[in-house]
Length: 356
Image 1 (cartoon, rainbow, N blue to C red):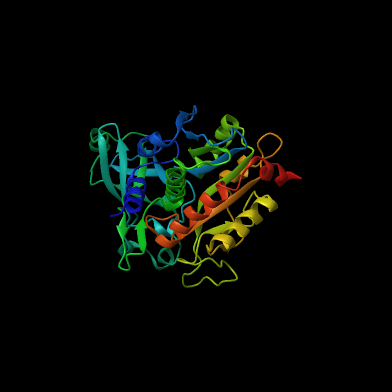
Image 2: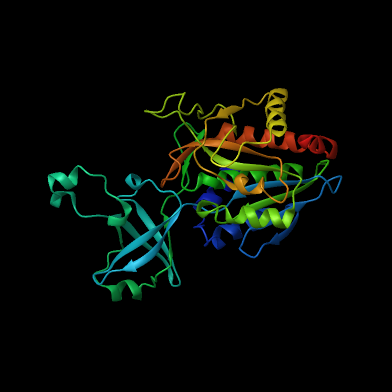
């Protein structure tokens, strides 16, 4: 594995349920430590301040470290575990998937189950099964056995999935690309710039609890008080059966994406155009993302105080918000190149002009 693959492997295989980000935060901390001055807010987000040639503008990069997950909510007398969803799961991707419960005694492996299909009536078999009817089975036969294993109400539950380079060598399969890929783009850009002059002061925030309300984005914006912000996200890839280019035009291997609209954010138009123009100047293909239905860190950052010019730069992946997603290495590398080029252009005069 090269250093990018190793970075992606370490980030995606680390546990980081919303509100339980400590394991992945420590991985991120190790990578950010040599790249700038580190601080941590009171809900767990990390901020790396990399000084440049000037103290302003204050450029905020944001990528969330949490992943969609579950939480133990009930243990039945016969040893089955009911769970809350942490983030936006599609119920149909859950059944028969392996999971890991992070307990005070260590990891406990289980599988998501439901009533056996052999015992379903014809009417039941024709219906979508919802997460409220599912359970985690750790192979126990009693509540006491589950509790003896260390499982308690409130414990986080994560997908059990490793990082795998796929057959082409250009694509990767892993959990949590949403948004560990954004974190990896941010880290790699800071590594590129650590010994290179940039005309601003960069504050790179690895935020918590994006999947349950963009919580870390709000607190980090307060801590940083940015003049401009670039959010680094995992975007949807529309190149799968059943999705037309009109519905969602992004494709693996065709370059990073830029959001023109999402659930709570229309980007600053001049900043958006700066990314588009810079991509053309440096020869990076840039995909225009479809109307993304969900919000992200930018939704809260752009509303900080009297407003922050904000844009969202993405790396598309197939099958996000499931146990395993797929992304393309070229898209990652090009996202880093574009981000670095834009950061080198964000001087005080240009940033001041974004809101004129």
